[in-house]
Amino acid sequence: MRKLLVSLFVVFGLALAAQAQEFDAAFGFGTVTSKAASTDSSGNSFPSLSGGLYPSFSGIVLLKHHIGFGGEVAWRAHQNIYSGIQGNFGILQPYRPIFYDFNAVYGRTYKKFGADVMAGIGGEDLRFYGVLNCGFTGCTNYVSSNHFAGHFGADVRVYVWGHLFVRPEAHYYVIHNNQEFNNANAARFAVSIGYSFMPGF
Image 1 (cartoon, rainbow, N blue to C red):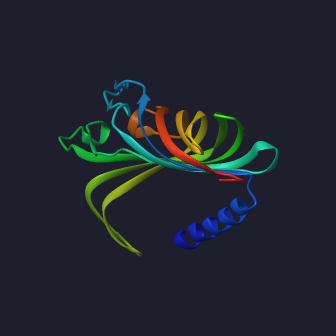
Image 2 (image 1 turned 90 degrees about the vertical axis):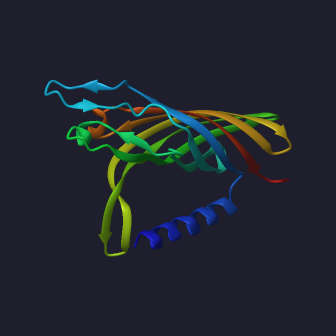
């Protein structure tokens, strides 16, 4: 079912992209910041989501009137060791956060510069490794803890050669029920390199 939904989304996206005034595709690197490690009133410890290198893929389609849609995914390049509430009994688990989002986008391009602002929904997928998890579609070596998230972001595109751009960007995730990290929200800062496909490219 998930593969069918992804396929439909891709086909729908390509159909809209064919009518687009602009399509931006980018790959980037960044990091995540969040509140510091803490301990609650019951003595449970919560690590911080901060740190690590996060590669990312993103795409934005702008239609008429500079309004469009976009999506992205960013994941921690290397696993970190979780030592919070799940590790209070001497068990330290490797884990990796993955952030993804789908947005409404307003973007403008003027000569050598462009900018986008976006808001939408997405999620945080926390993958805890070292646990064999088997289901209907097969087995994995991790279990996921998924959290719904609201997303807000902005970027500036600097065109360095033709339609090739460098894009500093900032993203903020409002993460629902993020109990592994004391309900902390997260911000991601990145720099991406991308290409704008537009009439005349």
